[in-house]
Image (spheres, rainbow, N blue to C red):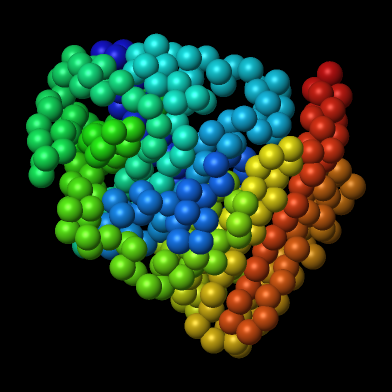
Length: 334
């Protein structure tokens, strides 16, 4: 496999992972205009197939220009090298050329599919040429141009990029909008837009989108079982999964980070039981954290609320906490 092939495949996968992971950032406590349509979701949802089990959004421009992003860059300057290499090969500057992404996990019989739709500025001719250069082919599907890669199971240099023998695809959906994912998922996105049978017709999913906190620059909603299958949840929480139906995660990244994960249980006793379990986990974490200021800072940022069938874990970590932890880390490293 050539170096240019790796950049195309790894770059495409990176954008997909960026969309999904930043959409779930509130749950993990991690870091990545507000919503283009704050109460009904971004217009790109019309490209999300109706069988989506998780839908996520990230305002890449907002996050990349945040004070938090600048602090991360100062602490880890080496991360810019990979971004620069990707830009040289594809012509895409993730920091300036991508405005926002909408990503989803698609529930299919026997397997899941993944898709990310990115809004920004792309040199379509350059991407087509790059695709052809590493053995890909260009074809049309219902009036949309697709760049298809050859089938590949794994990119060794990326370590964890698994494509499962599927063909990856990049489609030019409209001016300034591309879709990236496995071939079947990308074609499903085109079908959704042309037929009008998209996730916007899923009342339960769109209700969650409509309830997203205004001002969040990253969010994700969907079925809780789909989230649990991709997250390393504590055994005490995993045992409660059958009682949970939906989740909604939101994150706001500026100088600091704030966010929440809200879960909807099937009934009030199930919700109360889960709140009791989480309360116990918080107590255990405080004991295990001891006098470690890093652990204590993260634990103090967590708050459990909820009534009825709702369970919500929220957090707010101001910029001062990150500055203190950064200084502490430097001292311990000396």
